[in-house]
Image (cartoon, rainbow, N blue to C red):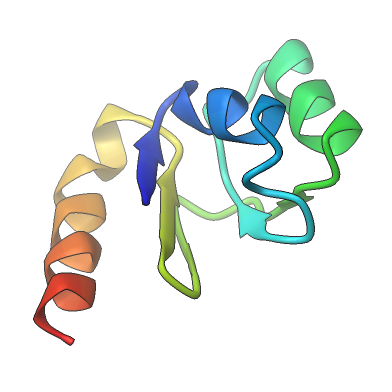
Length: 74
């Protein structure tokens, strides 16, 4: 599963990031949503936790894509 920019907030609201290390495009609301839904926020451009990849936004898109490919090859 993967999400970039504000996408991780959708995963968090769905309960899919409970106890999972994740990143998101940082706004007061996005950080609150992750926290309120028990995600573990990491201030990194791209975060991989198990089979979940999250990224903060367009600047990290290339690394985000490479991490997804790495997981798909496993």
